[in-house]
Image 1 (tube, one colour):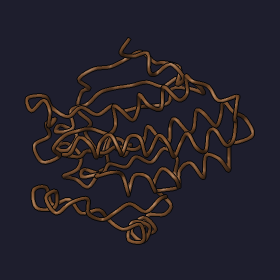
Image 2 (tube, one colour):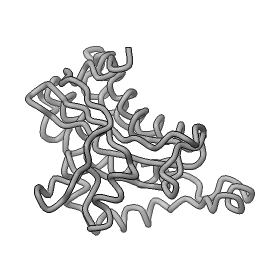
Image 3 (cartoon, rainbow, N blue to C red):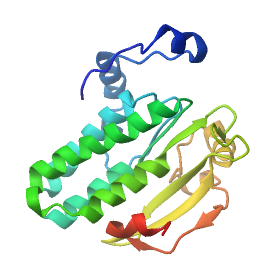
Length: 219
């Protein structure tokens, strides 16, 4: 993971408290939960993600596992890379940070994908990854649970659940409802703790879709 600056400008620090965590500290903190960062489907949410210092390192670790296990069969690699990317969520107040974070995560995936499969890479896979990152990295305020550019609209997160070897089921949930029903009891985003955790009703459901066709949801 490339080392990003810790401060973009004094104005941004003063107005938004924006200071980026150094790569050394990021890795030290993630090493405390190393087994989770290397579990492909384990979900991570960074409520003040900035340009993605934490999320980028999490994705690097997950994709290293995907490569080591599935690089010999392209379809398997693509499926598990999509699952890894779909498990990463972020919120930030500043729109340029959101765009940079999305692009940074995409570039991490695309560099590995291109290196492994070269001319065999599929545009549909790349489009699905772009689409997932657009849904998962949100321009919003984690304290108000609202979008910044549309302050009356709630932050909505998509849950991406594998159904079988190629299909994924998407359900959209209000971040505020997820927070109120789970985080107060120390559970994670879309926790799989079974009956111990209440998950609210989704605000929208989509039919199960091939993971290479996820980007067609909004068409």
